[in-house]
Length: 371
Image (cartoon, rainbow, N blue to C red; front, side, top):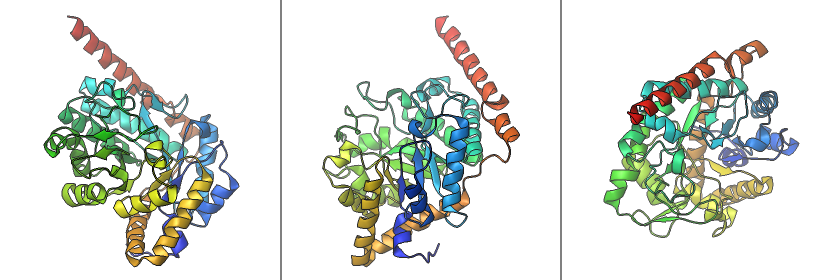
């Protein structure tokens, strides 16, 4: 895709930010309208109920407009990482779903989640988790992963991401190249994985290879150091990992999101301007800055100034912006057309049936285990 965009707009397409409150701030809407943002990520602080969520998404979509429809993303994994309140569908943890080993049911569950997200105007779900739960001491992954067997995780994750995307919501698999065997929370510190490449190929990487083979729309990086791949360099900032491995070797063709650049794993070691430029050069196409709008402004300024000075960096920004815009235009926010349609979808018959079938399957599995 060839882009004819002013540099400020080109670089703005790479920034997906967060904000406080249930109403999008006027300055955030202005930034979207002027092309200095490429979308928004929503948290519990933004989505107190279905009506407020719909109004917020409509405002964001209108600000972006038809030429630059925004990413409107949320972490609606299930279990303990669920942002939307009742009557939205809340799935059990991915671990409990993976234990059922029922791929058609898992696909249906993802379709039900996606239908509800699409009804309010959310077009991106930061799910599924592709990490393998290989370390019981991991403080951040645990039951967010589908399980401890890489093959089973891969099969479950593919069913889930395909279900999301069949219903018109972009999936984002996370956290590349694998956050499962860490003992630190990257929100608070920078974890390191010391395994050799053979172990990575056996355990960490298979779910990501499977997701890429299934056409996952996007992936998210991990703020971790993988010594066998790029010693001392966080994956988010590593060209060896984000470009050479992910695109060159694995063949990923979608949009690569950084994890939040405000997390301490990155922010404690790098100024946000430095981290943003390094992440883009490494191969990230979209940068998450999930809380502070002033930091988002600083990221935008840093990208523009570096692109002005360095033609190769400008080319990398243009490549990233083309990927982001192409995906957003393919799947723009499309909220339900009427209150009646909305009520039929959110907490509706399909969602209730999925939950009933999950509970039935869990009960049957429990009964089998008891005999």
